[in-house]
Length: 354
Image (tube, rainbow, N blue to C red; front, side, top):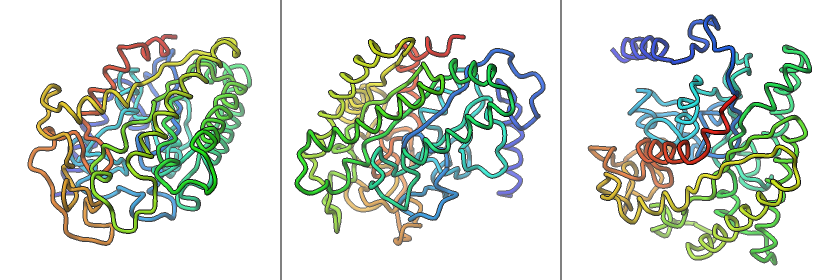
């Protein structure tokens, strides 16, 4: 029965794509389209961590993850689609596949390098994630393959018209900070690596970027309860680091806009959008802004969703659409859809105009 349901879903999914993807080859593809390259962490990871040797805490390839939309787990840390999926949909692109997806050879619509737990710093969850430096190396391989397949001119045109989304930094601030380091110095390292990534993509032709500022991690269910063995920063310290990061990123981007010819960007104000829904859920059509739909303990703050992370028992809410948070640290598809619509209509849409 489950297998039959899966087959029916795949048929419906293929038939419903606005632009046909690998379901039916590439007949009827739009001549003009803007590719989408995605980097970052669990906000955008479509399942890259399914294919690496990591801990269960950094994977989500089991039910009820993915159940609402896909009807099966994809590795996304939500009950359905992520912001990056909605943006692809609004841009009339197919879902952008995970870079590590087996058999993936066509990058003309873009590719997604994001890895749950990844940081801008190599040391963040080192050995368990695909950090930003490695994601950059993967992009270099894709760029080389595009040049070989399309030729120098066409590849450069694709890369220069493409949009580059990134969400990075929150994991760098959720781990114990390097000793004897000030907040300013530590945030400086994170933003330095982000800036280096921007300059690297720019050198390869990239001109159009979509950034997300850091969401209010201190307001997630996981941070409302003192977790056993937690050695990371306190809620107050994380908030201070996030605020400093968001302020400095804004300054750096304004500076780069003056320095780099043709550099354009759009900023998703995730911090404000998420905070509003957490504090005033009913205003946005939700009933619960502080507790997670899936997990265990007070606020369902313990990261046990799906029962694969060492504890088999967990609670699951009856109606996921009433919740802001799906698990202890990640939002529901409904939140991501609302936020994506706001970002798209604000000014992200303009970056996709050919």
